[in-house]
Amino acid sequence: MSTNKHQALHFFILTSIACLCTFVSGCSKSKNALVEAPATYQPSPVAPQIKMPNLVPPKLPEVQDAVHRVFKDAAVVDSSANPGFFTGDFNGDGSGDLAVVLKPAPNKIADMNEPYPAWLLRDPFSTERATLNVELGDVLLAIIHGYGDNDWRDSQATQTFLLKNVVGSNISVKTAQEFMKANSGKRLPRPQGDLIGQTLRGNNGYLYYASANYSWYDPKKFKSSKIDVGMVHGGR
Image 1: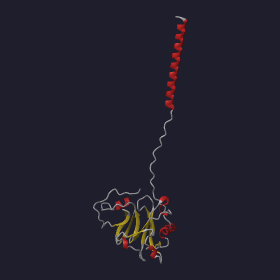
Image 2: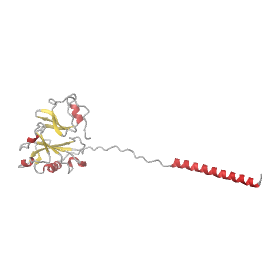
Image 3: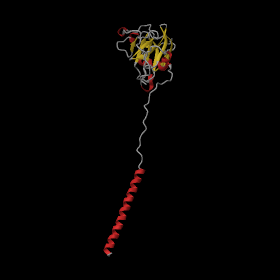
Image 4: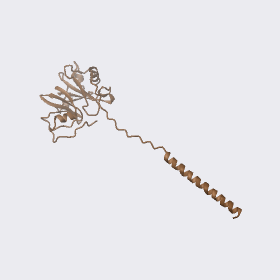
């Protein structure tokens, strides 16, 4: 073989070896890069937080502050009532509400009957809202709905129902589950939150919130086409 052909063959072999090494090295780096690439971070889904009412028992000064926030000086806590105030999530929105027994303050009956009050005056036993008025000797139940993180203690908690003719005896707060268990097999309404059980007008019944209003449930007189099942706190 001539010298030129020998040199050409030698050059071809060296070039082929160099190309092969480069290819192998590239594959190796590509494989390592693929193996060593960090995994993409996938944050874990966060479960939605369900707000629960503040269950710290109310104190009289706090209750008086809440009453003054809504009624100013027109109404006062009825000191003769037992209990005079109690709490629960009565409208089922996850905020704690305050129920307090009130009476009109002396010489303030006109303020309780102002044309555009900061509360909703209702009588669960009457549909004549236009003629409703607060009378001097009335014993009233105000339910102040909770707002924000501080529930009924919040400075912006002013949505209030003022109810006539619903203060009885043996008052207690019942959850929807307790209500259903105690009245199993009976025709039931569908409350949105906790209920206020008591003896009123000689009958044992419950005050409850549904359809944006408070109503009275008497197991002996309640009229419903069927028994509602699966009753839960609608706002929770």
